Image 1 (cartoon, helix red, strand yellow):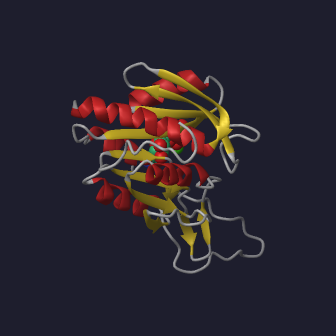
Image 2 (image 1 turned 135 degrees about the horizontal axis):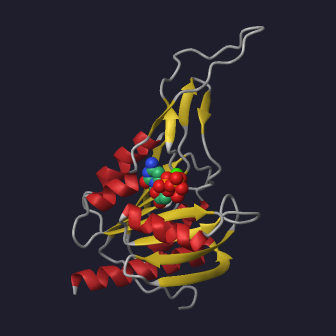
Length: 228
Ligand code: CTP
Ligand code: CA
């Protein structure tokens, strides 16, 4: 497939993509966050629009230009992201969870700025778990809807990825290795697509658009299989 000659293989499909990184407030001026830039999720939105899909992009704290042709929903926290994704997912053919969702949030949000007190050590920050949106989407799965997760791993990347795919119950897991120049904030990415049916597709180092197109190839294949 050459540039400018994109097959509209997602025409008539509604796809939902989450992107960026959630922020969990501690007080009016501080939050717990992560390093996700949102670039991979935005690349997924642009490429899905190019392939003819109706696209809902649920973006958490990404400082990136709005992707033309996509419905953009901005959120801050994991619970806002969950609400927006579940709402948009109601009539979706595919949901791709590219966002880095905070696993935990502060148990309480201080109404006023937390001040330091001379001579006193800070209080520890109590955390509680956030809901696992991907697991929720996968367990309450509508037949025919494709659910895709992402995982950034270290150490035995493939073994960790396989275990996570099984635990989450999604159809596809995009696994990348975290390290220098990889994944967070970078322009390029390198990954392995793990499928629930045992399939394993390595995607060489390249632009995030190229990885996005590989993901849509796999999603389109699963959607065709589901409606056949
Ligand atoms: N995810 C989610 N809700 C959460 C946490 C993660 O939907 N509360 C999604 C992410 O968007 C991603 C996938 O789950 O698509 C995997 O995220 P990851 O952090 O790698 O998985 P965890 O199950 O949180 O495992 P870990 O303990 O390794 O962080
Ligand atoms: Ca996590």
